[in-house]
Image (tube, rainbow, N blue to C red):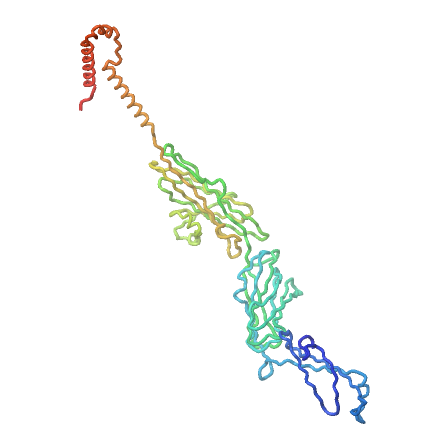
Length: 486
């Protein structure tokens, strides 16, 4: 036996002696079959070697029985013990194989060395035991077989694959043995095949895959579902992003003293970070410019310039054209920059081999008088599209759209010149009034001679008192005269 069973002593070999005489004599030996053997079809071969030796005792060979040379040589006998077949009452096994591509098979083939193509096959045997079951998969150029494994099975199954080159082509046909030699009846197994992708191969728009299941005893009437086809779209990875570039106007302010017109520009850049060896996609950029601004502001002379130079055409967003219906503003832009009225321009940038710059230029002005100070902001946005049926971006959607925001401040400056002039004039008039009053009171009269003449009369105290009363009367008269009437 070849490692599929042992004798009762736990060994693959056993020996012993046995006395025989006339008639039949048997000796039973137990053979234990190992668990999980691979070959259930080939019969187990048991080799028996024996030799006869003549006994000189009372039981020696009777006269007329000549042993010849057997007493000195060995004889070999090799019987075969077949396995029981699970083939029903008729003893004939009729398999019924069905194979198809499972829904967990890769939905797309991304031409990138860092990705793999996963093919999952569902193999079902709805009949009796199938012998030497195999799965063949014609493998197109550009795929390199990596490994095969069993994902799910209703029985204990195993799979082994090898790739053989097709003589007339450069492709390789992949052949996988499933649970050789017997694939049990009424069983189901999911087989996973992994392939590496060769980026230097020539790819079409789709990868056409065909798979076929076969066995030695599959009935001819059930072969219709032994083959299945599947189409997988081929996509190319791109690394195109957009961002707000340096040179954009982030802040602008207007003063009530000098509300002059100020230039404002928003600069965007579309760049292909890692161009692949395959043909790059045609890129279309959409620029959104607001048409309504915060109260008191206006943006005139709007212009969109590109470098390299291309033509940017306005798109009518009235919903009456197919182009307008096909344009959808990304949700991220609608969340952060969504003016009520906007204008969208379409720029066909072509293939992005070098960074492309898009600049929105306008003149921002104040439409009315600045009464109070305030702050507001407005934004523009840019996003781009490409052929998503052939290309896929390696970055998230946020990298395919961008926006630039400008903060506007209106500063109301108080004009203090009239106040300064009024205060100065009022102060001057008040000073003149004070001077006149003081003059009326005789504050500016310095008649020392009269004062000296009145000094002798100061002894009795009458003259000075009269003089003081006279001066007081003059001041009262001056105050009465200068004071305005009520």
